[in-house]
Length: 346
Image (cartoon, rainbow, N blue to C red; front, side, top):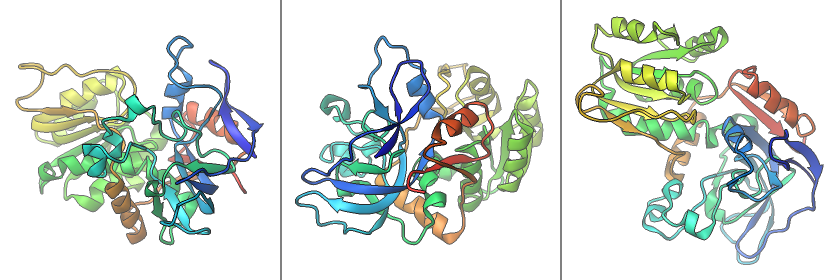
């Protein structure tokens, strides 16, 4: 089969031929209908050779949907032909966090060498994908595969972050979304669907500010040195009750701190590598800072239900598997509005 692999440290990913996989006991083989492209992949590919955490070559793609093509021995929870989405943050399935459905926070994944597809395990940008356990499959329930696949990360991750802050997003409150790209434009829709808060979007790109307005942002502000003052002015000097930074670079983290109100939540979702100092006098009183990761299996079901209701959708640009390297080039150059989706089987 064809697959997109990261094969050499520092080199771009390549489309190669690899042996067709077969499912082992308890596993499921998917024929991949759609796979997502994500900035997180660059975080993997930009790591130096020293200390690189995964064996190469690595098939990329941690967002995947497909149809069940074959069942390993002992699998009865799904049937051949089922249309499913892959829950990506695999865990051990037995620890206290996994028992809550929070495999994204599995307590034993590192110890057991369990990795998500595309982030250590073979990923979904391939014609076929082996899923380690049927519990990591969620029925699509009639959703279009191209529209659904980004929801497994670009929908689930902001949903998980926003859900934590719902008690603070009451009438009259303000939520700030920093970065209106792949995750941010979904976050805007989720905030509009789930809360009465005024939503203020920040970005450096005119195209993404336009997208933010289309997705329902009440205000779209250029993310520059004047952004914090603009948000303060919009909120009468109070600031925002919840701030979601989908970039995580030093300038955006500084802006997140500057726009946070007393008792606000600040969620650093982006993986730009910056940190936010926390301590008395560093931030307004009782600001809570978190660095959430992905979401739970139950939350993925909720995100897909929101999509079926029409409350959330993802702007997508599709590519063939042969053109998958081009998708990464366009994403790296900031030329993708929303999310790039690979169609491995046409």
